[in-house]
Length: 133
Length: 133
DNA sequence: CCGCAATATAACCACATGGTTAATTAACTG
DNA sequence: CAGTTAATTAACCATGTGGTTATATTGCGG
Image (tube, rainbow over all chains, first blue to last red; front, side, top):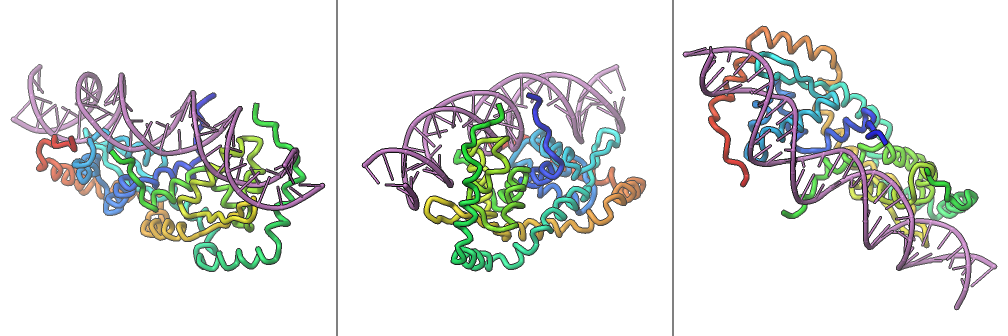
């Protein structure tokens, strides 16, 4: 049962799903910084190793590139993965442009009895018991 | 130690960080569907309750609105949270447009001895030992 | 070479996540 | 009312995540 490696889009979104990590990216958008520079704003809230771990998540997602210079690890922001993420979301643009109209449109399809029709369609499948085992 | 509620941006990104969930959104982008409709493509891989859980994540993130009609729960996609997510990423546009140039630019700042300067700055902080207790 | 500064690793812990099966609720239908 | 369909809830388990402290590693500078 080998531990399931996530696709890169998932890794990107997961990496962005943390305010500390997003703040680190914000810092990096203003220029290269090494680990202690990145950690400095957070040291009242968490330890250095915690920051290192966050950084590793960003690295694995490809959002940060960590190089070496003597005992320092200068980090730079790499936007490429965000490109994919935005491209994926772009597909839903129409849904976030008129957001509020969604409910109204749903009500229309509902009065058209469409909801019921879609449901009956699902019935033909019969008993679903063939699980993965 | 009350369990720490995540900000909505984090919830949105976290919700999107799973291929099953993204597939459900894709399905919903083609029109309203109730739970079993949404579940159907996945029933070879996971059980119905698992789907319900994924759906709940999407709901909490505000990406899906689940209404009631008799014993069915018609779901619709709500793009609003994506709007915020994209807006946040937009801030980094310059970084994903020239992606590959980043390394080159880093090398320039490096030869300008900037990396060293930034590091020395961090030293003034002294011993950081006041953890949160 | 010694010691410190910058970072990484290890070992550990609490809680979240993603899945399971079994049981429950709710609403229609014969 | 009995049965069936749609969905949820409960209880449980394995693994991941985010944090900790303590210990190593590495490189520079006196």
